[in-house]
Length: 331
Image: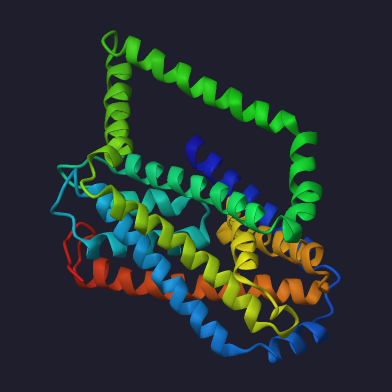
């Protein structure tokens, strides 16, 4: 009962935060101007956006398949693809639930939940590294374009909120201390023994990168995922006449900002993404609020539709037709 109440409170806070951010993003918008911009959108670029979005999901499934294969080579790409799509659809409704659900869909008798979840954390670690590298690359090659914005809107605020970094450091230290205690107390009680077993399973999954035979291919998949994200942002920039002068560096930097916004724990990034991208485009290019919001809306909602369509398809194929989330299906 207590756990259910905590979950309800968590989701209420999440949706409440989403509501605040939606209000901030859409406040003061001239909807007449917004729809004029929407009508002027060049939809050929949007088709390219959808293709890049689909390919990003393909490369994600290929990369995750590589991570789980050393642990159980009977898990095929088709099953990984379905698990990713269903998890992505769940994340749109409930933030943070996608990784838990896709982990469950890949769990087998041979691979416990915590081991699969370890591979998910490994994926996320690579994603965080990629976001940082995207920022660095875009700043190195186009400092004159983004440097001022980065210093004023990202670097200085981070310096003024150093307590956040200290807090993250404290959480990391606490996690390390907890792991050490569990390891030392594993033989003294069943409780700590069970925690240790779960921890070992998690670490096995996390360390799977060392077991991959073709690490170069894994890195290629990782690069292609983020190349697709860059192209998605670039194509939407090009689709809007007021932003059509964008270059690939713009797509790279804006994609980095968008992925930072997606880390805010609100349903599907609703509100956080719109607000951050709207403000960022206004600061970077001097666009109106309406154009900034149009860009954010096109990127976010079109990607959400793509994820939902693929998620529904995978759910029908995996759960309804096969009748078993653990059944194997080759693409």
